[in-house]
Length: 439
Image (cartoon, rainbow, N blue to C red; front, side):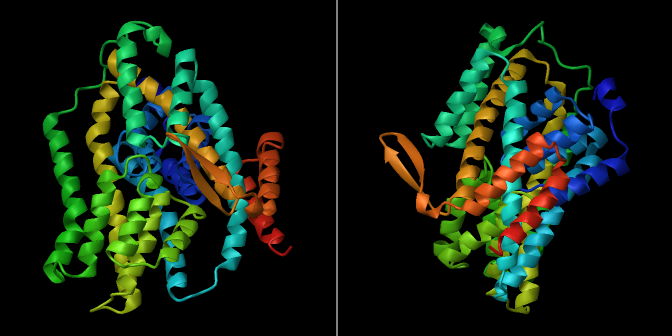
């Protein structure tokens, strides 16, 4: 860590308070969460600079799992080591996990959630404004050359129109960036020699392997307990094994695996009915925390409906906890094992070029998420039409939600014109959504 970074570092208690607050208001999926953290730790607090933030974000986009939670863990680690990473990464997901757990219990007992949907209609509109602001800010700072703007546009077209797999977009941009950095570094805005490692001490391979071993044991511990006490035939084993597998292949966030998860949960295991998966996704989209938290809803209902030898509620709580554990424990493994190496190598030209290209592509990724999110906030039904290799999302105009549109306009005015803080604006929009439900 550089001296400049150390001079701007918060004390540990300040870090805990900040990420506790972020954990309570990080609505809107990866785009909204990345935007919120950028505003909190870069714009308002200045704990890390723009380059370090984008460097961390680029690295996290290469990892399986929820990139926003891994970004929080990386920032915490950069500021306060392993202790900071554990605090920031855990606080980022715990509030949302508790909310989803409570709502899963209510859902299982057939409680009505109309008031909740009304409350969070305003929050979804607020998140749309936050995401739009983040897109404009990050694009303005990251797309500094024509080639970077071309990469961003290509990533957007590839994801939104051509349905190119997310890993292919990010890895392709990184590979292209490596080549361009060696041949035409000015296309990526690279200056100077930038061919050596930083002055950080070289990470020890033994320490890295020890970190991997420890976190593999942490990840596997609850599964070993299930195997010893209940065996492989119990629903807890199926839950843990399935979501452990999902944690390894979830590149590009929850959207990239939702279809597969829904198919397996409904048709493969028979844990949910088809409409229930959509209900769980709706709950996850309107609560704080990563969208992948929908897995906890699935794990709760799966165990709730096959509870032996426990009561349904106890089984559901264990199933939800097991799902959350095996989903998020790998995130700490990737960050604590690999981040020290990435930090040391960040000035190597080929790596810097690859990550700079990924930065540009990520702007296209956020633009894709922004448009996707806007369509699903403003319209109740979206259909997909294919024309050759291109796929278009076509909104059903009869499902246009005038309340969501009105709230979105209000949120944009509060954030852009009135310049309200995110926390104040979120609170006001939640109340506005609840008030508008009476009309």
